[in-house]
Each structure stands twice: as structure tokens, then as C-alpha cells.
Length: 391
Image (cartoon, rainbow, N blue to C red; front, side, top):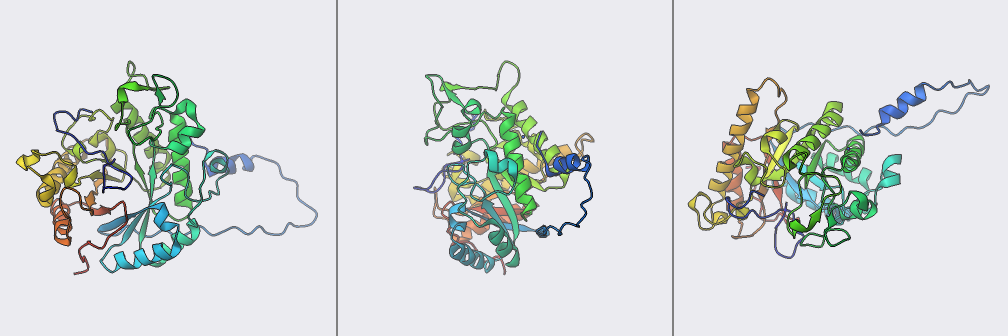
């Protein structure tokens, strides 16, 4: 999910030509409580002092139209810079923040409270999480926790038995030198669900998963999967099982969840060789966010030599295709909770200089498509070119 502004860590894979692109049971707080309730406790002769329990942060309500921006853990590590950015995007009408909970190498960007995460998670703790959550809510924002899943160098390094292996030996690295987890490794599912539970318990209003796919951007033919077995199940089945797991573990517990997928998933009812299938995502998440960045569509898309020059046309076409899939699912009685489409839009210059007018064209497309808001991506967190949506 990858190929972004030059000189920044890529997030999105740039799709190649359409014809070529055929490319966590969790231990919860409730269990501990249940076990504790079965123990016989003797009454002390002297009443124990009451234990102070931190109040659970209140959650913000979902906006009628979610208008969000992505913020890195690095940016949020400076409370001064983070506060300034909140003020600047608030002035332009933004009402949601998508905040990284992992650093670029996969380490947790905050100090966890969960005993499970304390024991197993690589931690960098560059963000004061509670202070950041409070400041974000105080500023009037809906707060979304972004959690990259299978591209996770830190967890892969700590747990090499579930990391992708190289045919020649050792761990497989992608073109950026990063390590990946085997998508079929349920240990990775549980780990990320545990992060999601903590995020929600500490005040985040929604949890969004990214990099929920099989690896690309490298010599994938050299990958040896420690768990996934193509002879027994397809990539789509693996990713669909992950979707269903998070649905049961998190949405089933009342935690709003969303997922990012490639923009081209709205075009093709196949898994693009990465396991992502749009209908599967819609069936298990509250929101699905296709990354419909016009710069990521190959020349010739909709007969445009340079799709980046045509933001409205590219975005509206992709979102309408996605809503056709959603409409079909809505008629399926076996899928009673179909998610909403909420796209990622391009707020960076690649393929064309993205002016406020170019960005606004994408907003118009999302609104015409009837989507439930939109999110802006800029890896540098430079949102000076956002249009004024307060007008």
C-alpha cells in the first residue's frame, strides 16, 4: 500500500497495467475477569483501601461526513507539532485524524498497558498516547488508530518463525528491505487484535488496519511461507479468514473497525494476487477504504494517458464500481452488516501537481458517489494544499 511522494517511505503499491495486476483467539480483559471471579477470596479483618481505577476515556461520535487526515507517529511524537497540525487542518474543516500506532519499523509507538503487549510487543514509545488522545478529542476530532499488519519488520524480527523466509535462507526482504509476516500466521492476527483492543480502551474511536495482504514489491518468487500453503487454500481465503477473525473479535465486541485496500479492488472481483477481495472486506468491516489515488493508476486507465491529471474521473469511476459491489452484498441475507465505502484520497503531488482544486475534485467525486466521507493521505503530513471545506 505503497508508492507515495518521492523521498518518503512508500505506503501504497502502484498498480501496473490492469491485465498484469493479477497479483489474532485473543486473550481479553474479560477472560481475566472471568477467571478472577471464580477464585474464593477471604475477607480481610481490616478493609482494604479502595484501588484507584483510571476512568475509561469517552469516545467521540462518528461524524455525519468523516473528513480525515493521516498523521505519522513521528509527527505525533512532538506534541507541539501535533497540536499545530490539528489546528491547521481543523481550520480547513477536517473532523477526523488517522494516527499511526506503530513506527516505521513496526515497533509500537506508545507504551502499552496490556500485560500481553508488554510481554510480546517491540516498543519504541515515542507518543504520549493518553495525552495525545485527550488533546485530539478536546480539539473536536474523531480519532482513528491506524495499524499496519503484515508489513511489520520489528515483530517479524522478534518472531522469525512466522516471518516470510527467503528460498536461499534467512528472512525475506521486500524491495525496501523490510520484513513481512506470513498472512496465515494467526499469532500475527491475535497480536494486532490485542493492539486494537488497547487502542479502543484508551480512547481511540475506531481501529483501521492497513497492509492486510500478501507481500509485493520484491522478488516474491523467492518467498518461502512458513505457514501458508497454496495447495490447501488461496490467498483470498487467508485474507478473508483474517477479515472474519477481526469482525468476530473486535466488531463483535463493539469496536468500530475499518480496513485499507488497493484502489483496483473495486475494479476487479479477484484478489489481484495479494488476497484482497472487495466484497470480503465489505462483509466484515464498518468501513472499507480503497486507496483511489489517481497517480497510482496506469497510463490508459479510462483512456487517459496520465490518470493523475483526471482526479474526478478516476475517483468517481472507482467508487461507483465499489458501490456496485456493496449494493450486491446488501441483497444477500447471509451478510447483514455490509460496511460503508470511505476512500483514501490523494493529497500529495505525484504524476501531477495536486492543487486545492485537484484535491477538491476528488472530494466532489466521493460525495457524488454517496460515500461516508473520505480520508487524505500525505506521507509528509503536509496538508497546506487542502481545500477549505468549511465553505
